[in-house]
Length: 351
Image (cartoon, rainbow, N blue to C red; front, top):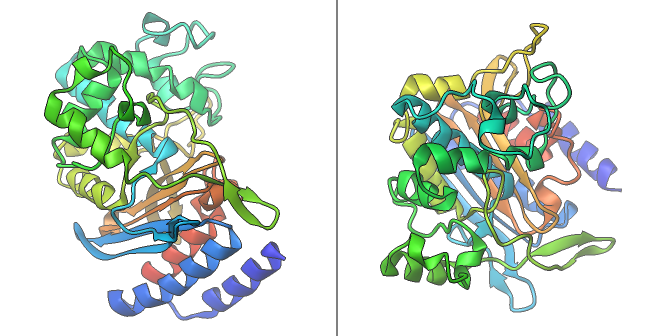
């Protein structure tokens, strides 16, 4: 039934003439697709923002952050953004490269024992090409990506979450984001990383964290939280309002030089010369001649989609409080168009 419904929706969508730029009309159509897809994918709540030319042109909440209490999802609702955290790790590592405190071609074994291949480098882990013969093939693996936590620790000279806060969150004024759910009730060692004001802000922000849900046979059901700590792979809490600030800071080169950002958005190449679907912490592909850079996030309890068309100065960010934005759609292979949410956005907003 889900597959049939999606098919009918997209027969209608793809029959629609390509849009000219009319953000209000396009957003109204996109809203209808998001709400229908939200129900089909059993996501209790979704928060969304679209940016054009560095300005949010549309932001909305759909459904509920807390179903039983009927608390609506809004653009300010906080979510665990799961693997969207990887894009932040990319930025932190490229900051180190620019400062000369890291070479991406250093062996990862210098920093972590988690990757068994002795020839694997930081670049191999960052591009998901570390398995088997390093550099030979792409295989998305969040657990391996987490080994980059210790690389950030070393090249920034401070723990990952502290580097994330000072080098990205604070610089982009992402005041509602939290570098780890465990900062709600920190262990004795964590408070020393942040001053009193920051700790108070984090504790206050976590109170807006949407409840987690999992897909069930007849919809969705309450679920436990995913791991509360943070690594290079996952664990940042944020909202679409704060991620919009992050997006603007990326595009205005607040964090790293434009050349470094373009390097991150360049497809890795295998040892046999094959262009791979991933760069330095980002997926990259072309759709109808338009470059798309993107990432998805997926826990069973939270999911996310961050999709940019840099040459069109256009961005979509979606956050959800179940796995439904991602779990049924095979994006790990490198095709964002496997997501009906992405497909609707591209068809409506990118003529």
